[in-house]
Amino acid sequence: MGVEKLKTEALQLSPETLVYPVKELLANLDVMSEAEMEKLWIEEVPRISTFHPE
Image 1 (cartoon, rainbow, N blue to C red):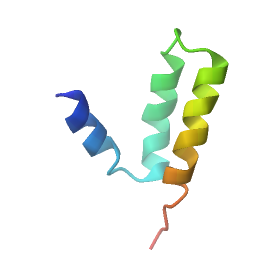
Image 2 (cartoon, helix red, strand yellow):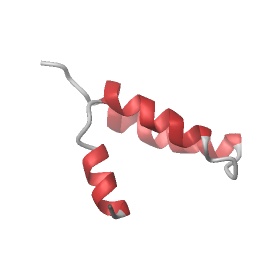
Image 3 (cartoon, one colour):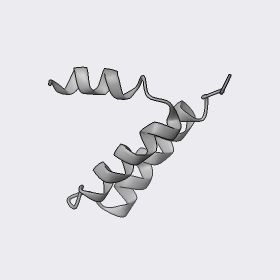
């Protein structure tokens, strides 16, 4: 599976479902500093906070 297809499918998940794989991926990014990870989360939070359960 290509990165773009994986990204497209992941973005279709609910925020609650997306949390686990995101946490796992971040835990495996030893090369990123804490500041870099925080920056990514700051960028991601507005996108996932738009989730409105029906």
